[in-house]
Length: 97
Image (cartoon, rainbow, N blue to C red; front, side, top):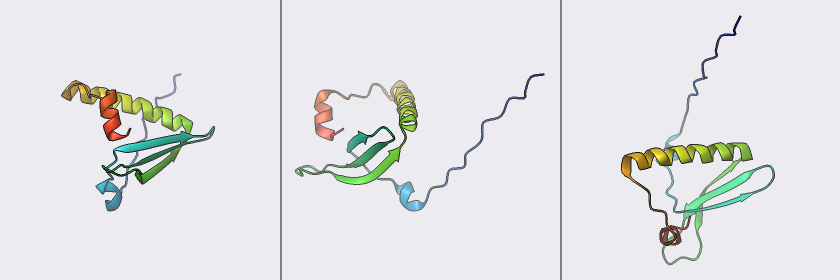
């Protein structure tokens, strides 16, 4: 007799108001060790030599790889609706990613 299939668990997401407001980032830096990835997001202001880190995310290599796959899928969906995102060398120099 086959086992009944389990339904995916619904996850309730809670977010406080300060986090829900979000942080703008036009710069990111990523470092890693065998155990984790550290991703800093921040703002690089015109005329300034230093970026101000607004948020730091520390996560496992496995979660980082899953995040990469989700981002690829979401970018593909965006481009399907709105057209190709230009991310050439010239744009990268201007925004800092």
